[in-house]
Length: 141
Image 1 (cartoon, rainbow, N blue to C red):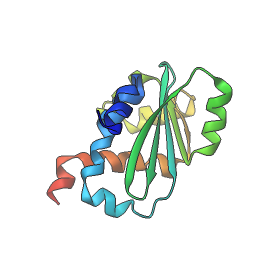
Image 2 (cartoon, helix red, strand yellow):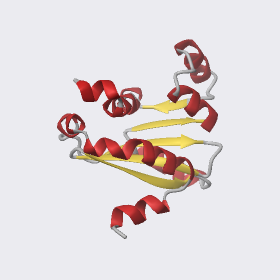
Image 3 (tube, rainbow, N blue to C red):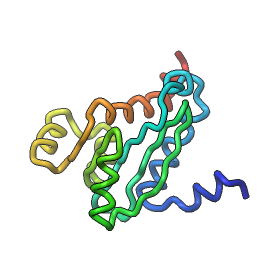
Image 4 (spheres, rainbow, N blue to C red):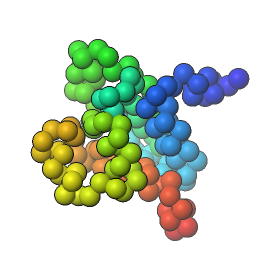
C-alpha cells in the first residue's frame, strides 16, 4: 500500500469527504499552473457538528487534505489563527451550500447570525475555485 493510500484511509468523517472531493484537483494542469506560487497556504473547513475538521493545504500547486479532531477548543482556536482562511458551519449547511441550495441571501443571513463563521473571506473563496477546476466546464476550456 502506498503512502497516499494509507493517508487516505486515515481520514475520517468530514475530512474524508473533503479529501475525496478535492484531491483529484492535483491531476488538473490548470490548477497546478494557477497555484504554483502558493507556498504553505492553509484553509480550515470545520463542520462543527462532526468529529473532524478538514485542513486544506496548498503548497506549490499540490493540494493535501488533513483530518483534524475538533473536540479540543484550544487546539481549534490556535489552528484558526494559523490558517489563511477559516469556514465553520454545520454539515447540513455545507451540503446545502455545495449543492447550490443555499441562496446568497440565506448565506448572508446565516453569516450575520453567526451560524456560519468565516475568517479571510478572500481566501475562503479559493474553495470555489477548487471546485471549479474539478467541474467539466473547466476541463473543456
